[in-house]
Length: 254
Length: 254
DNA sequence: TTTTATATAATGGACCTACCATTATAAACA
DNA sequence: TGTTTATAATGGTAGGTCCATTATATAAAA
Image (cartoon, rainbow over all chains, first blue to last red):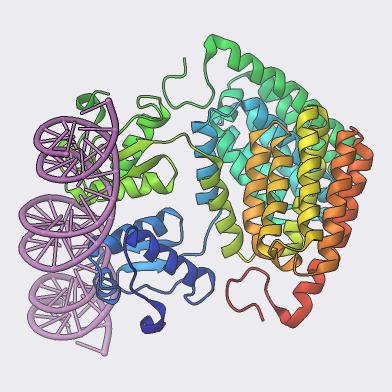
C-alpha cells in the first residue's frame, strides 16, 4: 500500500465521511486487499492532516458497514474484512422492524422466491444435495417428534434448511436474500414454532417438499410450497390478531 | 422524553456502540418518535457521563443506519428519521459489489423477480399508476430518441422506471430488493446504455411492457420481460468478454 | 536449550478543552 | 411593520492526555 497516493486531504463539512468513502473506494477497487491493515489512527491523522476524532468517526462508519474490523493493542488497527452478508441482512431486518413491515408482505415475498428457487434447485441441485436436503428435513422431523430440542433450536434448524435450499439454486444472490429474510423473520418463526400442531405440520411438509425435489417434480414441489404458505398465512393472521401483538418486537410480546 | 429513565451510563469497551444500541432500542420501541430531537451532544455527554467523542461515534453509527439525521446550528442536533429503504439497499448493494457478484447471477435474479413483480403489478396497480408507468416509459423513449439527455441521465430514468414498477407491487420488500439491485447494477446499466442499438431496443421494450401491464395481460407482459432478458444476457456476455473487463469497477474500465 | 516470566512499545478507547462555522431566534433598528 | 444585526446553542474539527490492551522482544529460570 502506498499511503502517499492513496490518501488525499479533504476539505470540510463531513471530513469523517469523506475519508470513510475514500477508504471504501480503495477497498472496493481492490487497492487494499482483505486482510491488509490500514495505517494506525495516528498515522492517518497525520496523512489526512486532520484530528484523530475524524479518523475514528471514519473507522466507525467503515466498521458499521462491515468493511473493516478493529483490533486493539500492539499490531492492532483496522483490518480489511471480507464483506459478509450479515451487515446487509441486519440493515434489512432493521428496515423491516422500524417500518413495522406487515408480516404478510414478508410471507408473500418468501413464497414468491421459494417458487423461483424451487425450479432452480430441481434443475441445478445435485442428487447428493437433494438427498442431503431430505435427510436434514428428516432430522428436523426427528427433533420435533423427539421433543428434546428447544423451540429456538427447532426454528434454527428450519432456517438452516431454508438456506440450504437457497444455496442449491446455484445463485448466491438467492442465498443472500434468503439469509436476510431469515434474519428478518426470525422473531416470527420462533413464535410460530410455539404451536405444536404447526411444528408437526411444518416438518412433515418439509419432508414432502424435499421428496418432490429429489423426484425432480417441480409441480408437486410448488404444490407443497403453496400449501405451506396457505397454512402460514392463516397462522400469521392468527398471531397478529391476538391482542394486537406485533410480531416484530423485542418488548414483552404478550 | 424523559432522559432520566431513558439514558443509562455504560461500562466499558465499546461505549459508543452501547449508547447507539440504547438509542436504537428506544427508537424501535417507540419511546422516541420520528421527528423528535435527541438531546445535544453535550447534554448526552453529561447524561451518559462520558466524553463527547463517544456520543459522536454513537451518532455516527445511528446516522449510518439511517435512524437519525444531524442538523447543524441553533436548534440543531440529532433528529429521529423515518427509516427509508435506501440504507438497507445501499448496504446490500455494497455487499454485491465487494463480493464481485457475477453479473449473470444478478441478471438471473432480476429476471426472476421481474416475473413475480409483473403479476403483482397487474393485479394490484391502479389504472393511474399503470398509465403513469406507460407515460414514464414514453418519456424515456423521447429522451433516447431526442438524443439530448446524457447516458447517465438515461440510465437514471431507466432505474426510476424499475423502481416505480416495483413500487406498484404494493409490497415494500420488492421495492427494497429492486432498489438494491438497481444500485448494484448501476455501473453495468450505464455501460449498456452506451450502445445506441441497445438503448433504442430497451426503451421500446419498456413501452411495450408498460402497455401490456396497462392491458392487464400477464402472459404478454412476461413475454416482454423474457425477451428483454434474452437480449440483456447476450449484451452482458459481450461486455464481460471484452478485454476481461469487470463490470463492477469505478476504475478506468478500459 | 527450552520454557516461562517480564518489560516494552504500539495501538485503540476514552476524556477533555478549545475554537470555529452554522443556524434559528431574539433583539435592535429603520 | 419590516429589516438588519447581535446572540446563543449546536455540531465540526483540532489537539492533547491518560488508560487498557496486546504482540513481541527480552530476560530469567528450569
